[in-house]
Image (cartoon, rainbow, N blue to C red; front, side, top):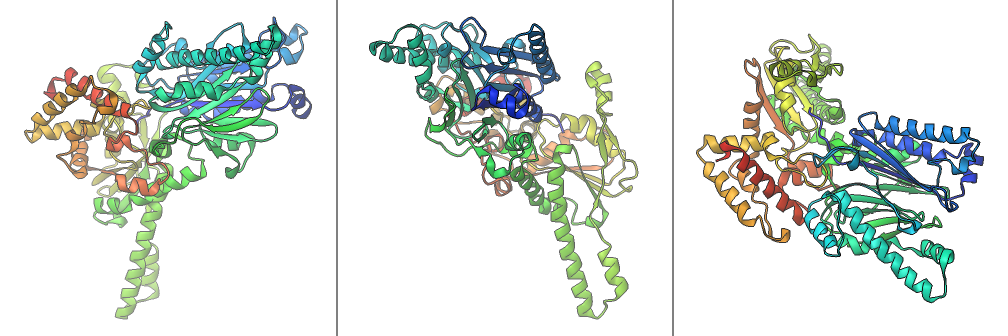
Length: 624
């Protein structure tokens, strides 16, 4: 019910034929630029704080620009960028210049949508980042969907070579690291071709032709710890995208004789290019897709594939539900909740209304309804068979039984016109209670109400708005159902869930420790985390698990319900969570579950979760 800011979105296009081909076939040199705009709009769900695009044009005569970049901030960033790009093209053409040399007309494009996952903002942190040099094969555009857990190690490795990075941020540092490797690859080729007798422009062209970005990636990537899809364009026209060895962050691609397309989500490519699901391929963990200057394409295994840690939150919440597999999985998540929901309402289907909040939970809601309908059908069949056995079956009785339905209603609608940030303090809290409107009369007084959500992370909107509003319908009981398990641990691979003290599950566990006289557990965990704070990341264990260990999932869920129930609430409140076991049954191909279990797929995860606990403990007196 609260928006989770998360990792970013990427989109890349490489034309495989001369620009003249697209001008003649599609009527414009802007074919790729228009497709990039569509890809980015379709991925707008992945980043609404900022956006940027980059373009490289091949075979540009010396003295003319061949690398372009445009970036903007704010929710209208995509529109602002392409409006500015189109203005620059129009101004250029009005001067009577040839369209093929207009700004942002080229064969290689990248686009990026950003949600800040580090707390840093400003245009300097907006992708793509650019490295400039007078030699085309030493220029680079870089963007990605990533967060590194060991920026300090990467920083130390590049400063050890004598470099002096301007900023301490993972994207800047990766740009310097990759840029240094790009220089080494250029120097390698320079030596080879110089010994062969090449000089001047011929030498430069040969380096640009023979550049091997796989060498650059193999030099740099062994040091990377995190979840990532990192994308680059070299000034000579080489393009690449690499995925982390555990497959934490997603990437998909499509290739035909006209174009290569890479994006963060499969249905985005399908929609923009009118493709079938099997036409779009998934980039495999540890693999890079590389498009060379001559437009030849290959996929190379840069790092060995690790454990499969594809992010389950992508499937639950982040990615577009129009993907065929994600749609099916989200329905299954809802269906798996059926027994737990029936238990929460004491099996009383006939006096319960079912709904969903927010819209992202709608598909899981359909799955839950399907599961409930199957249960109701079983009950109806049993009742008819029992009556038939007893000789009491009649046409009227059968009609009465068959009229029983699962009651589902649209009980709440978000009022998008309200902007609570315009007020402060108590006024803001009061406005927050009106973010959703309810459908009066949708629930009978004294009935039970079940609403399904995709995840409950902080619980702020539940307490301040949702439960207050739903209570006005005067239900006997409100059951809030989460299609994901309890979010207990911070993410460190690109999702804005980093502060332990904000997680309602963590706050519930700490509350239980205090109520049961077990605050020494919190102190002991702090001491264990401090003891490991300076160790190499490979030797660190996740000690935050010990905060949850004394309690069952049900105990923590009950405490969450107590913490989130607003004062003067008339209805009984219960919160039901998906189990980790059922999560994996519903989404078998994406087992990455560190948010729920604390089982981080890379060593850096354990270091950062312990550091998050230290930060919490040292900043909160009640933790002591």
